Length: 470
Image (tube, rainbow, N blue to C red; front, side):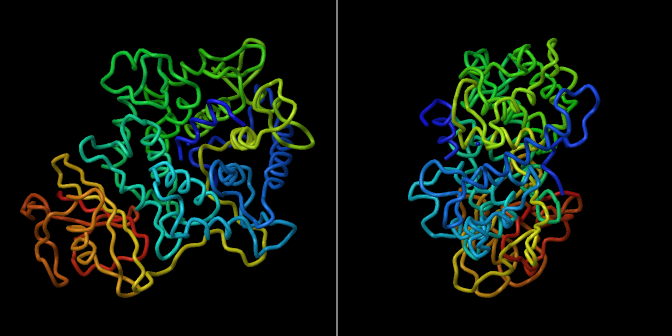
């Protein structure tokens, strides 16, 4: 289908759900009942299952259906349980993981949103995005698009959605144990850029507005307002924050009283409404009460359920459409089910299938990447993807830093390490030496920062943070 929203989504080539307000238990004032939501969820899952190809795939060349994983997880269905004709060897998770591990994926000219989209959906499918395979680390791939000249942006700053989805992916795709894997300094940098791009009306759109009074004064759109709200919340901004309150007011101003829909840039449609509701869900804001219950007693969830064909389960894109849309069905189901833009995978019902799968060790001789941040305490945060070829099942922090001096993207992440060999404690990095005031410390996957020793063991997919401080 050709329409502006789908074209823009090509630019993105955009336990329980991350930050989601669970809609299975609703206050009495809500208009869509728990039973109606359960029916919508069940029928929506059945429709998304019907989109699976005979080979078990959802994703492929061009515009594909991999966003289904985020909706399925939000609705309580594990991707590993989704099989074509009951053939468990072709379950959706295994097929998707194999695709992401392919050397030629995503294309010869990838963009940051390819990796962000894959991070959100692999996480929802139950694949640790930093440990897809011996060679594929999606978190490391994203780190490589950090903009050194304009810290906090990922990918071309003019394409602001790349930064929004970096925050959604890096902040939302936690470790399988539930830890926030990226350091606070990186989250703060992302938050600052998202705040700087908030329009005067309280919302956002897909292009950069920071520093441009004309763009800041331009009307926002519903879609990116939902995504940007979610990006702030999954990176740690509370829903009581002034910028979240302003975004809620913008969305409220776009409500259509008679239907509960948001009047989006492209007119009333399921995708825009789905994104807005997912943004509210991610921020823990109930889209069925308070500001989002109209004078006619309608809510955005009412509108979405009204867009669904039953018992078929697919969702219309436009209210007058007579056939379902795959994308509208993904966005509609994820929102109605209470999801943000990704969700931790539910426990599978398939016997013996684990909730998570991940590469367990480096494969000697197989080139890979690691995600690295270096914070020297002066505000000069360095972020990079380090390429190297391990020689064993594990490596060391010293080996990673040595590789970063010549094989980091962007370059300049590490300019020098003291000592330059051995396993001893690092006494200086990038010219910043340990002192009585502060020393270099290291952590992986959000762990507590401890002494930075060159000999510290680093495992496949570790997200490494170094910081100088007390």
